[in-house]
Each structure stands twice: as C-alpha cells, then as structure tokens.
Amino acid sequence: MTAGNPLPAPDEVFDWIDVRAQARQEAGLARQLRPRAAGSDALDLASNDYLGLARDKRVAGAAAAAALKWGAGSTGSRLVTGSTELHTELELELASFCGMQAALVFSSGFMANLAAVSALTGPGTAIVADKLIHASLIDGTRLSKADVAVMGHCDVAGVTNALAKRKHERALVVTDSVFSVDGDLAPLAPLAHACGKHGAALLVDDAHGFGVIGEAGKGAVHDAGLAGSPNVVMTLTLSKSLGAQGGAILGPRRVIKHMVDHARSFIFDTGLAPGSVAAALTALRVLKEEPQLAGQARQNAFELTERLTAAGLQVSTPTAAVVSVRAPSPEAAVAWANDCRTAGVVVGCFRPPSTPDQISRPPAPDRPRRRRRPRGRLITARTASRPQGPNAGA
Ligand SMILES: Cc1ncc(COP(=O)(O)O)c(C=O)c1O
Image 1: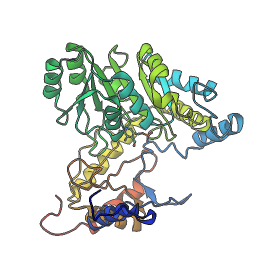
Image 2: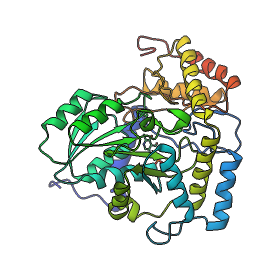
Image 3: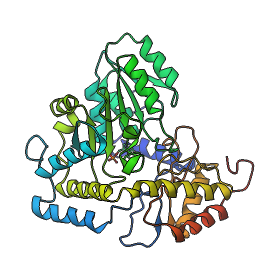
Image 4: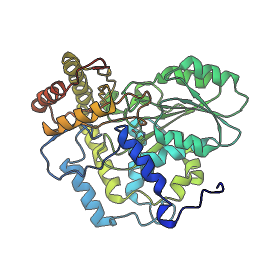
C-alpha cells in the first residue's frame, strides 16, 4: 500500500470486482445464469447429455428409488460413511465395460481429474501436458507441484522429445481424448507408444469419448487398444453420456488403491450421492443393452456438421458428439445462441477465456434420441442470424 492510497473501507473491499465485471461486460464476455425450465420443449443441443439418458425413466427412476432407499446424500466421505454397495457395483461394472482392472468413483469428473493428476505426480516428477487439456486437469497440474511442460496441441513429437530429455524418473503425460472446445481426438496410440518407450504413464480424460466413441461407446481409450495397459489411466465423468452426475478414475488396481490412500479430492470430499450412483449404473446398463446408441450419437454429429457446413458455417470435424461452430466475435456467438433460443433450439456458447484461441463458438452436441424435426430449425436459426462483414465465418 503506497502513501496517499488509503486502505479501502469495508464497503470498498470488493470494488475491484466491479471493475473486472465492467471490463468483461464491455468485451462481451459477461457470463449469465439461465435457469432451465422443467419440461421445456426446446431442442437442447447445449447439454452434454449425449445419449438422452438424463431424463430416461429407467435412469431417473433408479435415482429416485436409490434416494429413498439410501438417503438423499451419501452422508460422508467414501472412507467414512459415504460408500454404499451401489458405489462398488458401479466401480466393478465401469471397469469391466471399459476393459480396465479397477475403478474409483468420485463426486465429479473435476474431482477425479484433480486426484488423478496430483496423486500420480508430485514435486520432483514431470508432467507433459497438451496445451488444450480441460481446466480440471490444468488445476491438477497446479496442485501437483510437479515440473510441467505444456506441449503444442496433439504434438506427439514434442511429447516424445520432452520425455526423452527429462531428468525426472517419473513422468505423466496428460491429455483429453476428445477436446471439449473443438471436439477433435488426441493421438492416443502414438502418445501411448511414446510413454511406453520412455518409461512414462499416460493419463487420458475420456469425458467426451466414453459412451460415444468405439464399440458400444466403450470410449476412446478402449478404441485405441489401450484398455488394460499397465501404464495407462483414464478418467471420465458420469455427467455426460450417462446423464447422471459424478466422475471416475479407471486403471491398474494398484493405481486405484493408491487413489484411496492419497487422493485428497477423494478422501476429504463427501461421496457421490446414492441417487447419482444408481442413475449412472442404470445408464451404463442401458448403454450395454443398447450398444447402437453410441453410433447414433456419432452419426447425428456427422449429419449435423454436414448440414451446418452446407449452410456456410465453419464447423469442426466431429470425432464424437461435440460439434463446434466458429463465430467471428463473442458478441456474434451470443447473438447466434440467442437467435437459436428464440427459434426453440438451445445451444451453448464458449467464449474466451474458455476457448484457447480467442475464437468464440456456440457448440452443439447432438443426441440420438431427438433426430429429424429440430435439425432444420437449427440450421435456419444459425443461417438467418449469420453476421455479414469482413470477419463473417472466421
Ligand atoms: C473434458 C472434461 N473433463 C472433465 C470435466 C468435468 O466433469 P464434471 O462435470 O463431472 O465435473 C468436463 C466437464 O465439463 C470435461 O468436459
């Protein structure tokens, strides 16, 4: 504090927040909460409920029944009172479905990622991470106090080089499988090869791949032939394809046991609520009984991309269910999203700093259960509101 610059009075202590909010507002980046109405008939292309299972009666019914049987909350940490038979059942079925030795369920995918990165590394170890990994993985690297090398996007040569040159005995390569902003797929097999060659572990966040990619939606790790590899660990969220809530780490049994002993976001966090566990377990069983769901989600994303591209929009090539459209400015992205909403189609809106390259996108994941009718509505809304000018379509 400099002389002549007095300390703020209590009612001025948070004035800096107003300054920051004003700057966000002026840059078109202010975020807004929009509570969702129950039973709206708008077409929802904004959610991550890729398979339409969140409102499936079997899934929602299982959540309700479990809440009545076990209670609304899990009542404590998994290590105290928060573990139920349902948690164990879900862990066994998730591991078996994905071809991994064991699984551990967390209260969210975010918590699972914090745990996986921080408990597998630490001071004196190396992390080699793609520059576009999810925020939860980034926060995990910060918690870890490891030496972090941030690599170019999908840069296998860079990762290989960093692993080869490192001084640390232990190294963890960290990547998303399907990147959340543009929906592109990481080169998992070459990354695993580099890890194998250079004595490193590979951590893959399969949040957007699980339930959508590969045979019956077993995920990108399975599809890349890496399920059960001794140096591969994957994380996933139960809140996207499974339409529930929660997250998980899957990998070698000793890794999972290590998480129980060391992962702070497991040990010091209330266990996932029984209703969410039951919903995820039931959705997983639906996925097994209806293996075509994953392929339908991919096909829908592909068809949506074709039609958006034909309408003149710049659309990412989907590898799973994430379809992303580039907007010329944050304001345009918001305007498109608002026009879509008026036309009865809900799309999300990613803007800086949530996008890596300052380009805004209203992403439009698609789901197998809602197909024909609304697609035309979406194209019309996007096309009608497409901005004109030098940056249009950029
Ligand atoms: C790639 C990725 N990883 C992790 C998460 C976090 O999962 P959760 O929402 O279950 O905390 C998300 C969620 O949006 C995600 O997109």
